[in-house]
Length: 131
Image 1: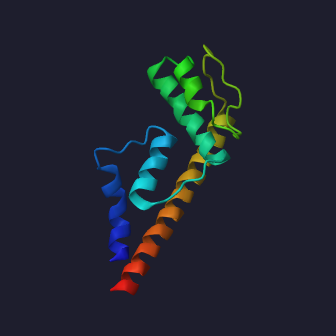
Image 2 (image 1 turned 90 degrees about the horizontal axis):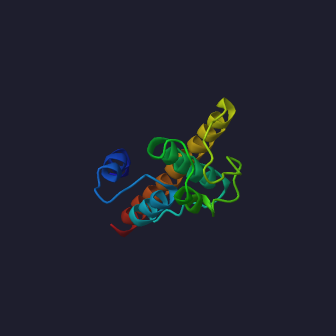
């Protein structure tokens, strides 16, 4: 059963109507609510948080940093990605920055996958012991 559940988890999570992956706060809430998984708020998470906020600026604000973005990333420390972001700054990215952010995103997703795997495995082990 645990193997089948593990295969179904991505569809169950992404197809639920009350789930958002727009920012790390929402992502953390989803995994806490659904799997009782606590994602650490560390440099990796903060890098991803800033990356998602700046992506929003690029897509929805013409690449110009606004106060909403600054509020969203204000507590995203420590971080190694875009340590300084200023109001009205026009965003430009060097290839190295994008690659570094990509590395943080991969580490973030891999960590979440491991945490969920442990949570699901522990749940299955508990059910087996009780049954």
